[in-house]
Length: 369
Image 1 (cartoon, rainbow, N blue to C red):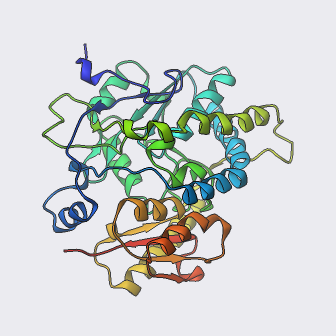
Image 2 (tube, rainbow, N blue to C red):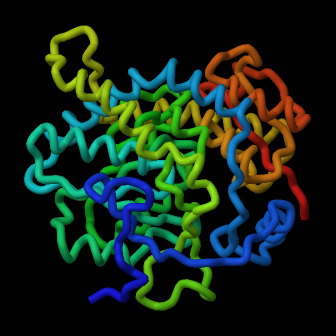
């Protein structure tokens, strides 16, 4: 039996929606500047530290509300498109393993949609950490209970594809097959299944714990994670008054429920893409070209400092120390929240649509060591 502190929990979601395979811990927070210096100097891995997450200000939340108005219906339709494609491709029980945190809201919605389609489905939130791999204890927990053939990993989007690389490498310990990764937006062309290859404003992509069950990103620090433990997280209870995790998925789900009534030949029906090798190669080539252009232009040697894609670029501004932001247009409505942060924090930016295509935003992390 797993220790009590390794007991799966739903965060601020309903238990029927997701169970996080994480160990809730208390840790001394690390300031953003100190964390950045430790990461870039190599003194500590980013997963060993956590900074306090603050509540979004009212101005920023207005941009989130606008993102919901613009994108909620699209996300609801694409959830159903992905669920139908998963259901058609996977025989037997389906197990969704959402990569904490960005994959969780999508995973919750896919879990509901697959149940509505009559499938046997279970949903877990699991940790994967760059350079460290997927949580082996969480994987053992899942595979002791569910068949690996029906295991589907869920993330919100792809950036450069670093986490996809990590997932593919980690999964070799469990199967000779490549992992099935499902995302909403796959501009990097790295997923098995995607709703589109477009870098668009996924509403949940511009918020953190308050739309992801009130948990921090995952932590792997030997002081709090022992042998046989799940990777850790902090539960941000101080943000409880700002939590919209349930409200968010319920709002998107209202659109998904309507989409479930749409027939496959209806113009509203969006067909999810299981990328052919040629499609994947084209996406990957374009994405790599954009990252390389930014690298050359800024004389960067560490690609981890480059964060491409609307969601990743926005999160980097919120959690890291940004040096510069590249955008496709400063007037793009999908970039309103990002540009609000850029202007409020006086971050230098440049408009370079051709250089960063297929991305619409790229954040460069400041070199501090």
